[in-house]
Length: 94
Image 1 (cartoon, helix red, strand yellow):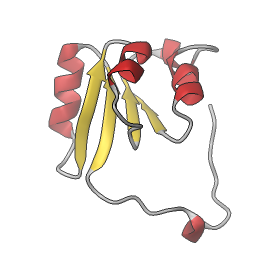
Image 2 (cartoon, one colour):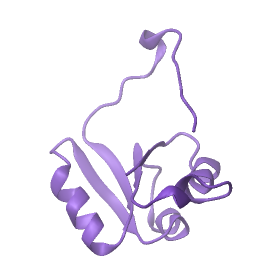
Image 3 (tube, one colour):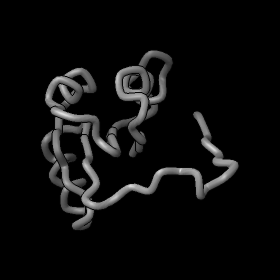
């Protein structure tokens, strides 16, 4: 697991709403996540795998949400794949 610590939080570029979100989950999981997210978040793509998500995205999302178990954090797993393909994207595992 990686922890990011900003030495100067003011140096971080502020994000402006709406926030683009990519979701890797099954159909029911995507609907649940969509229902939980508030108005500043817009799901721009949803898929069952990281490869499908990257293919479906027309742009890099601000956040990628991955639903699953411990396999998400395995070496070479979905989180590692997304980090390699979308390095500027925040990743949330649920």
